[in-house]
Length: 277
Image (cartoon, rainbow, N blue to C red):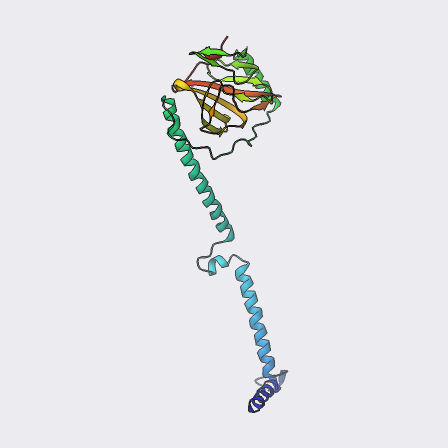
């Protein structure tokens, strides 16, 4: 009972009205008056504190001031850039390790020995689209260069070399370019590119210059190179038979086009010695 009475007295004091009067100091003239109670004062100052706290929070949270006033705070953009950079660095590390293994194996292969590793490729190249559009002017320039460099068309056939039968990678017409051991081979759009001999896939890769590329190691340091592929259907380390599919050629000017080379003991071979007239 005593406690209730005490609460009532406190509430009565809080609600007891007072008048706030502002007087002129010289004339004691009343300039302003306002009726207040302790409860009104508490509510008013409490409201001011809440509003001020909200404005202060908004000023810090939604302006660049947070990077200055909050210790060790980094912006969301900086954190996102850091996250992306971390993933890219991790991917580049994996690519560098793969390239190091590739160059080590390539040196061994070109010197006539076998690869030191039998790891499969981690990069999927079958979805890479190399159907780049060329302008009419570029097509005219290429046609003029083909006419002036004396490119010789040749119809493919199987050839015997060192007791082995070399099968053409694709059927159709291919061209020998002077001062180059590379062959530009024309074929059907949906015709598959085939291995010319039994061997092992030692590389499947992509570069802006050669496009999708497959290297097949054969016996006696013999390596066949297939470039400008639209898609690749084999993986590194796979053993293939002569005539087995390696992928599809890139499409150019309405027909398939394969770039082909032959290497022997690390030296580029004259392609005409294998597929010449």
